[in-house]
Amino acid sequence: MVSRLQAFLIRRLLWALPVLALVSVAIFGLIRLVPGDPAIVMLGADAPPAQLAAVRAELGLDEPLPVQYVDYVADAVRGDLGRSYVDDREVSAAIASRLPTTLFLTAAGFLVSLTIAIPAGLLSATNRGEWLDGVGLGFGLLGVSVPNFWLGVVLLLLFGVTLDWLPVAGYVSPLEDPVAGIRYLLLPGITLGTAMAAVVTRMLRSELLEELRREYLNAVRMKGVGELRVLTHATKNAFIPVVTVIGMQFGYLLGGSIVVETVFSIPGMGRLLIDAIQSRDYIMLQGVVLVYTTFFVAVNIVVDGAYFYLNPKLGGER
Image (cartoon, rainbow, N blue to C red; front, side, top):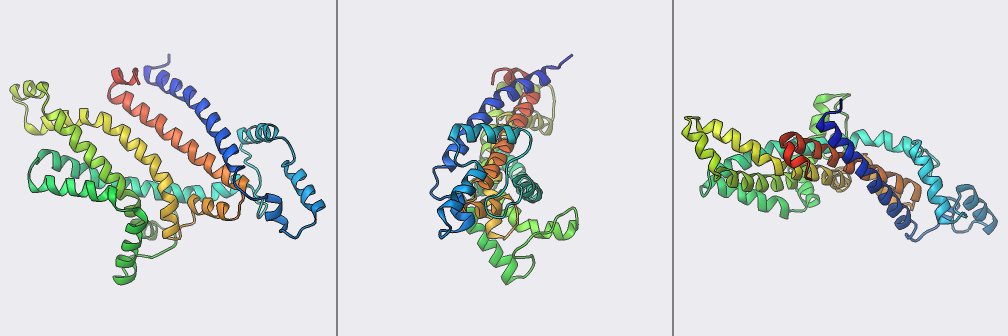
């Protein structure tokens, strides 16, 4: 028997397939609008026309766009995202080597944001109108206003250059050296997670304040339940819409990692994307963007599952 949650996730997965198909069409089409010729990138502008034509034929660039797209999708379904126009390496292998770094960075930003946002949102909501509430509101406004690249540079100069407490650039995998890995991920994680923490703090405060005003909590109090238990009940219900925001923000963390990896010289997917843009490596670029999009869609499916788990009645309506 398939449970309600499993059936719900299957429906969401089926809806995700046409979304990925449309995104793949958009990526394929838009990238080919970018000026530049991959054959010229590979051979140089002074290459003979015959050699350029031969390379275009070898890469399939002389085929009509619909044929190129069908061939690309057929290969992508098998896990073959093509070969780089610049250095002839497999795109799948290049992404596989960089993806763990970006996922570790995104996870660091996610953990930093929740570590800050959940206590800040709870304290702000339960101390409405007091100085703690003012601090929470101020952080929420400041966090979404400060660009993460500027924050990264400030943190780098303060803790990396001036105080010399943390590394200023580079990356060490936490799987190889946990202590060094955390030291290298701390500043990028704070940089990446601050904006998300600000958004979640404001959202949690707003939802919890609304929940604390509901009549059912008065009935719970009349039964002699302590305020801590009351707050627990209210927080669980307040988290239902917050979970959606957290999931969306996690997806945005993947995009924000592009800037953070550039600031801190982290060899992740973001750096791979920037290098592909600068070298006009179309096949690498579309492979990286497709993987980013797939992860974003997958995160939303997980969020939908969490939303359904917290409130099955609402889960069936979304």
